Image (cartoon, rainbow, N blue to C red):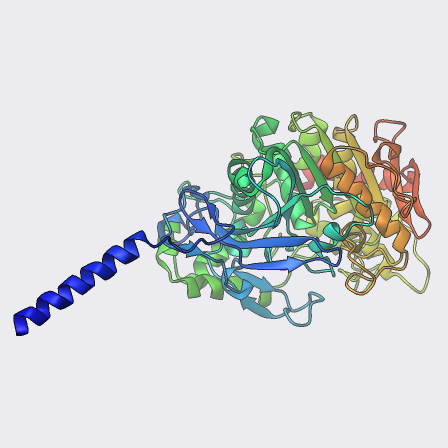
Length: 543
């Protein structure tokens, strides 16, 4: 009886097994097979205009830069991941190690440290209707970070990337947005003073991320030959460094860029950064890079926090101990100052089109104590050996109201870190570049993004909606590489062709409350930039 029962159970089990074998497996929609991982949407959003967007979050584009990979270029062969990946993790987990200086104007973030070394992830936002072969244009966003905090999920400044999908023009065109993390602070910008490490890792990470986009975006319906990289502040600075990679000879995975407020504090003499490297070794009790690689992640976070919170800030627009944790000339990725390299023609000429710009008040609120007495200190934070006579001459080029001496610092920081680098890049590419200065008061750092990524007057409120629509239209036309048909409901969305190139009589766009005004750059700003660039490029001044 017992054996009959056993055989019956076995027979029934076999029948069930055969039944299961012939039952079709449930279909999971919108699976993207990357070869090393299969991703499903993390969530679906519907814009106010009815466009359904799939968000594929936390796609790994490189191996975790931990252990023996710490302080090395990203390894772009991610390990195989089993099962379906939904990317459902918080930014606090997936951001690269971040320390927001107590003085930054973000109340929920300043004075905090978060993130992980295992952070080389990206997000893809694509229309639900997109399919392989559609060849949609791609906008790859390089987030601003002050080179020290933030990530792909953090927009900041009230930007809403979905705003572009709510465009004011009646178009059926669709596109894809990609955002990525890159290493920050100690992990991303530790200066290279050991042959067994790489410097400028945040730039290398970004190159790897955009290479990933070129390789895989076709699976999402994107066009690998129509990638526009766009970045603001540190993100824009990173794009500028990519243009200079290997003296312009590197084959880049994009051919047009939008560079907003490129944060490029001048850093050529690597020895200026040796105290930062030594400080990291001393605080961790290490004597070598190999020792640093054996430390737990908690020790890296601790020393990162120490550098940003407990040491005097570099000043002059940079964070971290002097001269700041930012990209530096290392002889491997970049061999010369951006000012010198662009002037010498050592930049990537295969890039076909650029838009470069900055706001008129980038430096608002920075380095403004005890002006004008501390002006020499602020200048020497970036140009250490500059003479007293040169500082006096430079100061004479700035005007400010008697009751607002802080404006001296604000305008100088705007010039040296953002405005003059933007001018340098635009001049180098003048036969294919457009330039703007965003002058809508108060024109603070990042304010222009609320116009180019305008969503609505609740999400991204602006004082001049028509100028915001025009700005957004320019960005969309630039990304699509074509003029849009005139929309009677948006007559202010003028063709991009009406925005002249820099090479056409040195014209730039001045964005005001009244709209776009095209004409030459203000002569006083040109003169200041010419003088600052000469000081920066003079080897006697120790930059």
